[in-house]
Amino acid sequence: MVYLENVIKALPKVEQHVHLMGSTRPETLMWLFDEGGMRKPFKTIEGARRFFRFRDFPHFIEVYKTVFRCVTKEEQFERITYEMLEDDARCNVKYVEASFSAPDHVREGLDYELMLDAINRGAQRAQNDFGIRCNLRIDLVRNYGPKNGMQVLDWIEGKRENIVSIDIGGSEEEFPPKPFAPVYQRAKQMGLHLVAHAGEAARPESIWDAVKYLNVERIGHGVTAVQDLELVEFLRKKGITIEACPTSNLRTGVVSSLRDHPIRALVDNGVRVTVNSDDPSMFNTDMNHEYLQLHRYLDFSIRDLIQLTRNALDSSFMQTGLKTQLRRLCENEHQRLLEEVE
Ligand SMILES: [Zn+2]
Image (cartoon, rainbow, N blue to C red; front, side, top):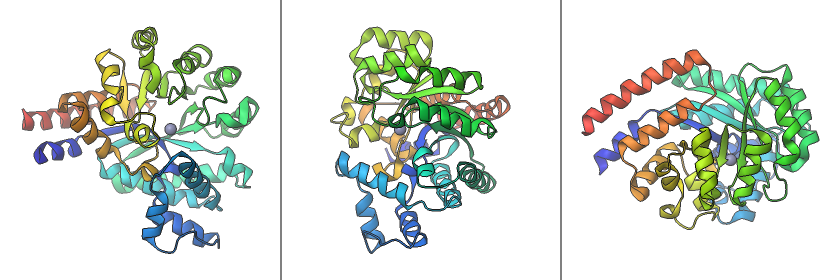
């Protein structure tokens, strides 16, 4: 078992669904408090870790808001990005699509372009140090409505080099996909890929609407898809990818145990699925943990896990040259590890 677990850790991986703010380390949150001259709600690093530990959903929102408020300077994003990628690189992740939710920071007075510049500096440093590559998916934050979504598209129009897609995160029940249709149409015309958080806890209709009105290529979470067999068949036929985040769903109570997570059923029904950490610091997870959990609780074999990485490569929005290069690297490494095991 220990041997197999080491092989799982050694597998090259790709992450599609991870939020920058949700990756902030407890140590870094303490630094942010100090930099902003703010009083910390905890005194020690142990206290910061306890504060981060998931208790319930309202506490999770409180942690999220606290981290948001603590970012007071654009350049702080350089460290947050670098550390997120350092943590991913430690799990042998080769490529990341990181989600950036800007509207809250802009409301706090930060400059959008300067934030992007800092993120890019952090990503470049991580690439130099660990060889990991990173593109951005821009979360429009659905709670602010479609008008704000258009505004975000204005912000990113001239800043496109590593921005590959848009997304809507936030309160799915209260802010359904349909009103965002014109925003998604415009994003498509801008050459961006289309993703939406859907079916995390809301009913399958939320996924249907994201597919119908927003034309999404990938669905964040998609837990409730399995409640509607017609939808599962539709996702399979259209090749729409589900970005599963099992530990996140377990912590927020969307599923009661990992064994109940629908990722197994989706895979068995031929839907293209990837596995992701979502908010690794807050949910106390990382990509190694996600892979190991699938192996332990849902009987994913090494071959099944390799297939998840292939799915992530195939459905990722990276540049074609990079995709060819990474595919070759992953195939070689997967083959070598498989031969060791079998
Ligand atoms: Zn998410």
